[in-house]
Length: 351
Image (cartoon, rainbow, N blue to C red; front, side):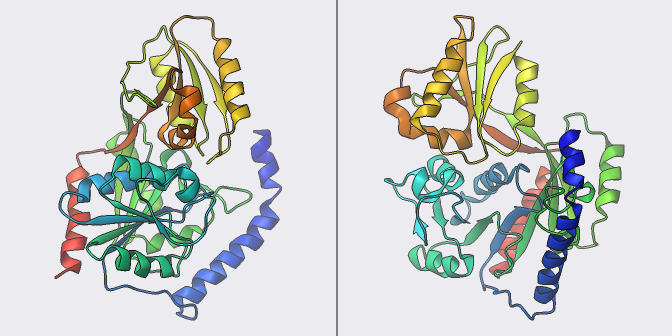
């Protein structure tokens, strides 16, 4: 509550920043600033907030949906990577070279082209030159970058922090003005509670107030069975396990709620989003792990954190560190409608 009150004190800065963003968008809307278009199907997955809405698992959902019928590729900025410029992942690529989220895509979908590039307007032609067989590109986290106009825009908003109720940075979490949502073709309310009612669904849709050309979907988080970081052996979490949660993600709330349902108690070491792990972090993790007073204990981490911990295979190969996978699940039996909208966009584009 104190933090929220402090953020309200930042409202004057928010108004200035919001005015700059609004003006920038108007310049693009008036075609004074130019957006490039490509005669090629491009799907953009983004949000209005700074993070934590589920873009990575939504990109993975799209890859799973498309990879058997289309030659799909992903293009990301490669946030916090140690390199610059355009690159396509290969068998020798590391997370430090392309970023944790692209590395996650590459490891889970080795047959899909995974590319990174700060300037997407430059990176898209490079990607198509390197992989001319590509039939659709998924832009990860590019909605607010208007140099490229995607053919289909998907934005995500967290059920517990809808963009309609949020403020522009720094008083809130929005990095774009609320009215930018009207540029989206599909709006997905993510991380919904499992028992979301039809009445609440309708109330949220009314609050979002979509245009006639927009569709609103709802998803909930589904966690898979944890698997060992290196051996990939799966395990069931039981209430009597001692658990140390290690994560560096924007919004660990859903994972914490998941553990509250499946474990009697757990400890947690939280790092900043996209945290680069160092050897001293391993010491902290081991020391905290030793403090857990039970023989049956394990370390649990996220898929995003896992790709940043893999470089410590020598140090952690015999350590009980497990990764919990995450996926979106569409609610109200609307997965078919969403899937059809995506595949129809690509097929119609290529006619």
